[in-house]
View: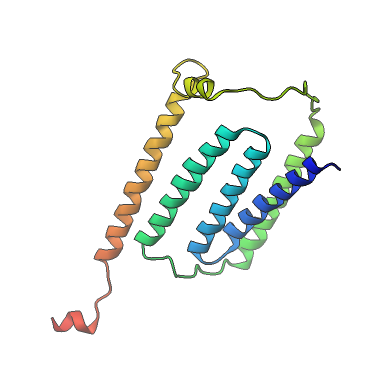
Length: 180
């Protein structure tokens, strides 16, 4: 095993570990932080593959945008310090079985597929090529998915604000508010 393979496995183990921590922790704010580390690990994987532009986009869009949006929504709903309820044993067992089934299915697909060794040439895509492809409206352009993602983020932000406003309006009545 060469150094490149060791680095790949270390980065992959980091991403997998942070992803598992993100979905298994019972504190919602910690879950968002573990997600942040997982997305930074994915950016590290892009840097390792020498696709620096995509790594920078990963950091700016996902780490800088999505995770900040998630943390902002957690703070708006005032649930950052609360612990999520423990999942019932039935749900945990079914989640583990579904994960094992998924891993078995993926292993079966990979085993059946014959991979090409490739040409050994470095992947060449300039920033100008990527930009023109993202703004293209042709068959292989990405303008429509790019716009759909921005509308989705806007809808998530509006939903977050609506949820936060509902929580502020439904505060429990205390003795002090009864006297006033």
